[in-house]
Image (cartoon, rainbow, N blue to C red; front, side, top):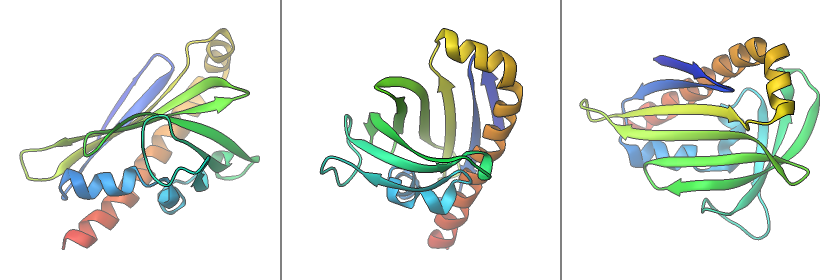
Length: 161
């Protein structure tokens, strides 16, 4: 497991003993997000979308920090490259706030290295927020990304066994 940080975000990488197509099926299926994420309880496609594609919208039901507050947030898929990358941005009142990404890379062991990351948009409001609460939020997000990826790994490795 590796961690990365910089700017207004951070990342976590976990190696999984499953091929990219198996991992991809889980990270790009937002309807299963609630199984893996400590904060997002559920998610659903919007506007007639039924699966991942660039430009598709979905909404997630979030329980911030696993305690609250609870709210729905709309997201838009920015990058959808099967077996390689699934990236989406959280929207707030029509503005981009936070971008989340899953990047998959086949490794030499026949498995997949999966990197989950987040990056707040480089706005004045986010810079102020990050200056005040960034260390706490970065720590929480790293813990949550690690939990998410470990839960995904448990499923894909159990299925592969």
